[in-house]
Length: 324
Ligand code: UT7
View (tube, protein in one colour):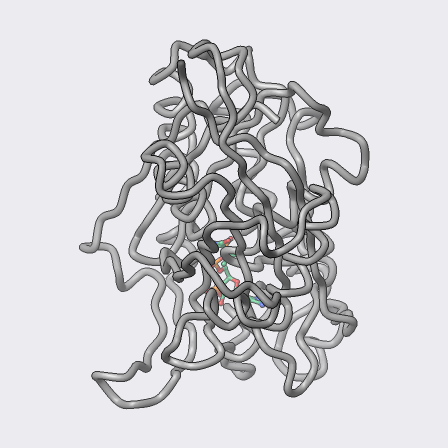
């Protein structure tokens, strides 16, 4: 008997405030045209004053629970990916746990920046396969607007806020790639490239939350190759190839990276879920938000083979292959 971690529900949350590219024309030397051409972003959402990562995460989680027909007491564990927690500690995951009224089980955060959701999914899968948990709520939630330097045009135009959630449940499979659920994962990191994307503040350095700093074009050069390679690796681990893929669900950093990766994988853009134009880069939230959109728009159907891939600060990157 093979145990699989199968998707039972999906949820999302986007803050109300929509920020169009034109807003940035009034605060830095940029243009709607540059932002669209270089990144594909048209607008993004920013959290309201006082709105926190845990609140957004809890709203996405409630929607995922309702989609799955479950309540919080049916969940054994929460794994939450974020780089923008409410507080240095405790984890956002424990805040969500109490917000949902869940008084048992365990909850913890995973921090792998934009690759966070892929790392969280992989950890949740391992918890299920090892018998530690039967149902896991996996969340990606970010308030990147709080760490943007609004005088730095090379970064402030790129990011947005939001949250997405998935529920994974243990189910019996046959051990073949026809099974529903997570089929394989591939995780990587290389700390030598940490200066390409980092936040210049932290507890043990300057006791500040700091601002995001990025060498965008250097990171861009790394992204396409690493993303295509990790997606291929995840697929080949279980004997699948690019032709088997129904949907690529990429991290939404830049439309040119998304297109370049799809091209390298030989998958046409019609089979790629794209939300970057509406959400900007929401870091660990971008993949679950894209999964939610793909499902809502009727693109992702039961039984479809998906590959998710993401890269971000660390550098950390990875991919998960799953059958919905
Ligand atoms: O999610 C985590 C992972 N993040 C990523 O993967 C992001 C990867 N990088 C990117 O998406 C792209 O590199 C960017 C969108 C950040 C930038 O695009 P690019 O084509 O690599 O542009 P660039 O950084 O090489 O900059 C080109 C020019 C520069 O001017 P000069 O030096 O050529 O005169 C920049 O100063 O564009 C300038 N520039 C801007 N101009 C107008 C940079 N930001 C802006 C801006 N508006 N907002």
